[in-house]
Length: 298
Image (cartoon, rainbow, N blue to C red; front, side, top):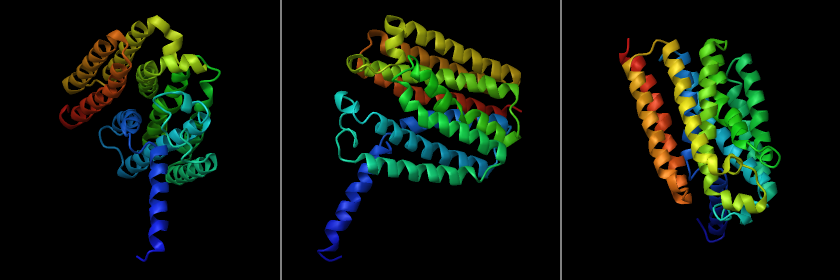
């Protein structure tokens, strides 16, 4: 490499790094929280043996759509994020990436997602179009809707569930919708904990969130939602006649909720962030329970 080429590669590396930060590739927790409900659904719909091609497409699709969601969210919030302590260093907020660049990255990710979904059947493709519309519209809901976390749950957290059942079975049985409800409730739970981190900043700038809407009832309402989610997953287990492996995983998931309630007892922002991140273990526990049930439960 000669001296003239070095600056070009250096600049390219810096741009790619900024794009990676824009897509939150450095913070995989969001991807995991979206992956777990999809994996629950694929293993349930596939009776413990999801088709490899479907599994590969869905995993890649979740990663791509999560990245696309982060980009469009930051684009929508590019004038808000500089006023929030936790987000002011993001590439768009810090003006290290231009809005035009962000739109280009977003369109590239959407094109990749569209290519992935065309590997699937027409019914799943139809559901994916609905999911894409929900995903793109979500960042703008926090300006008008007092419960944007509910919209997030439907668009990001839960929509992969009916898509997974459609791809595996070609139809959407009752258990699909119960699992969908559980996934939506879970997204409201963990994103409310996340919103509690930024509540003071959001109040100042007028952004809506469940943390603000719930006010001093936040912990109680999150606790009620956690109980409802466990109840929904219990209905799934009863409907499918699952045994001890599944119920063990569900018990561990319930214990993570108890731990999260303990963490947020004083509503300290750093502790609320840890409670949000702890939800990764909640989703993992449920999945391991489903996995072991199909492997050893008979």
